[in-house]
Image 1: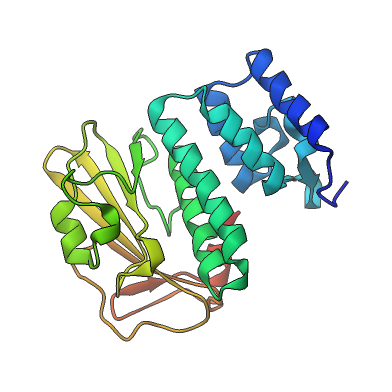
Image 2: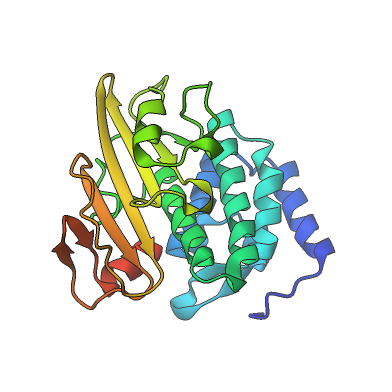
Length: 254
């Protein structure tokens, strides 16, 4: 059934079956999240198969309306960090739906969802997330800040950098997605702490069409990626921006 229609009762019964038979663990939910990118049936809890569409080559595709309900229910059984990430992913999916009528905004949410899922599942990408695969990063989203300043009040990158808080565990990846795209250079930032006193910065500028920012990006960032809704056929660099190709974008989103 590719329509995405499934009675609520059957969906709720599938979710309950996962919960009551001990299928919901931190590890199984991480595997489930990875299926958003891979479509691998083996990563999906068997009762949830009917909450998916079947795509090309037998790959399964999420029906977000149903999967968000499953993830919210499962989140209550997860450790604190994973629960926070799963709830953030659900919120971003709701934002994606709400913003579909707004130019560019829905696409931004989808990029951040994919970024978070790749980080939490350690499905790193050589272009967008060139992280060491043997490192088990702890993860935070919009929270690794000095307590005296609300995230919503930060209006520029320098203020954010000044107010980033060093994590409690290492290695750590702190993802920041400022509300309403208030920064003039980066829409998404990641601060990677491999060890105490060592911070690498990754910046992403999200553009709906083909445009290239006229501003030269901040040279203090280890990686500066221009993510475009209409990427070029070939990858390139300009004004210190890394501009992935169309195929590299497709590989990242899965």
